[in-house]
Length: 307
Length: 307
Image (cartoon, rainbow over all chains, first blue to last red; front, top):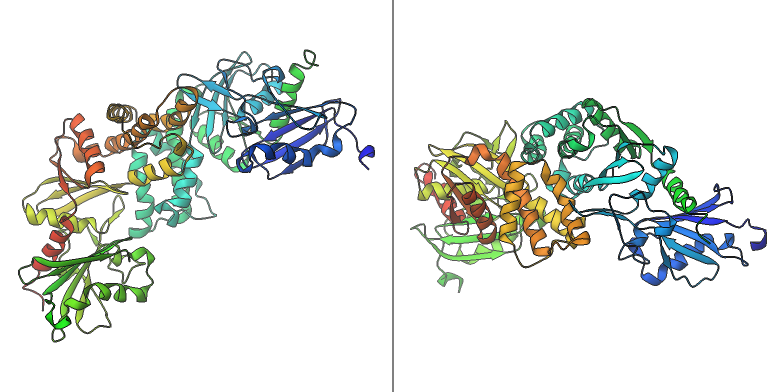
């Protein structure tokens, strides 16, 4: 059966903390097969990375040649398969020649890991987002402006002349998760409904008086005890207060700028609607296939120069 | 042996979420014995409260009379022994006549629970702190100014003419715990040392530009990855950023005011040193015995009027 399976020209790997996704690529740089598992970097010891990869890609490896495997994401962190050190801003998203080679046991693969990007002042790091940015730049080589990547750690990135000029990370998503699931507020903000008007009012409150965010938080609990604050309103206000203070701090990034949001559905829409209220018509680009586009950009950018 | 044990004139009870403390009081309102257990309100079902109390106080109960037992704290929450509804500001700390009677099985005790205090606008609640405030007012009946009670949920309370006029709660302690123990920052802020100068600089940063707090947080992680930010510096900065944004929001409470801090050692000192930098010479009063003083105030304030 193995001999009948189509073999990959190269393999693209998105290896995050909790997930592993691979694409089997043809000579035309189009994937003809994909696979995934939950063997993210967070749960693997160093000697478990190669088996986790092999179990997904083995059928697509030719015995008579070496197949390039190019990886992005937390697999390159210090606790990952092998550390791929950060490159410093300003810089273009890293291509294959910047990747670090991993010594694999299987002679049929040549594995490399793309580095993350660091900024010295103010100190900041990214690992994985640079590949999504590479995807945007492959689609829009002349993009000049701001890319916002909402998530657990939202990033605002200034792109100019094909380079990542500067960026800033906010822990907004992680703060929302901690406060809504583990703090005293968990009793007050659990709801599947959503109050968009309260969300936008909270954005405005936070941007006008950022220090008031910390004063308003406990009120989300007390409002339900002494008044009639509904859970969907409290949840929307919590989200609005946290994203609002982020927008206040990130103002130099978005004010008067060309902003693109790379994200998934609900969270991306939260940022989009908040920016619209500030007069910034940000476009949303779905994150799903940008990583593959970015991995392809990294692979092909240096294709002629490598083996 | 039981007949030889001195009997209590009344019993004072501080019953919080995680701890239960009782004092056996003489007719002179001085405790002659005390006891405690870890049977806090958080771990008890409704029918487990009375046994938890009785196992500490039984030897001190007379068989031929009814001993008053007066309780303060989370024991009066909705999930407690019996809900003692909040009274609304402005109001003095509640005395015994405002307490709610609990139907105890043991005929030798008459148990009452002091209510908490609520504020309708902006919505806020306290339960337990009002008894510490009663302790301050028993010692200084003419106190007029601000009481700051640092803790998991820090409270700023405006006291005038023996009444709680208004108050504001900040989740600063809970935020510090969540961020330092459960967020990505846990890798970067674990230290037993302390960098007081960085703490004060972060206070100043946060007060000058409150929105920058959210921008600085991830930098505490990144600063250790791309630079040489030490853990004790990162820990002090995290604390300073969070207390600083609280001070920015609480400015109407403390600016130009007479401020007393009720708290325990380290945290009280953090608030004190930050306020000194703002030109506010706050006095620190140890919290330990104020609850008993407040319970005594609540008991004696209405002593003549009750049974």
